[in-house]
Image (cartoon, rainbow, N blue to C red; front, side, top):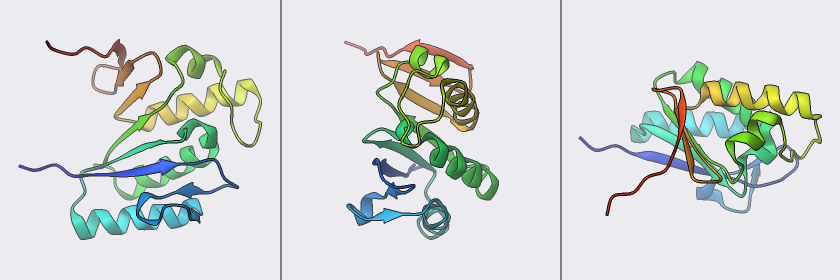
Length: 141
């Protein structure tokens, strides 16, 4: 059994996402959603991973996209790489392009986290939806 994931690089822009096959081009959330759904059907992608840049800098758009993905493709595996630590995200100490206040950033992170299957966070922490816990990344030697 072979698993296949799509990667979406999130770059800071005016309400848009950078999408790797079309690097350097800005897209609306609805366009990215339609593209992921189409590619899931066309190429049988098992998941999508958001990276960057920094996905949390577009937390509002990321949250909207994740809600759309969960609605359209509920079985799609969704993950994210972020440079922010769990503590920074939980307390709302991260930058967003729209400059929402700290309380709104905490709410955004909780919504985003609830839609992720995994997140690799700054400080080498991995959040697992299965266990609902964060744990340091460990390697085998």
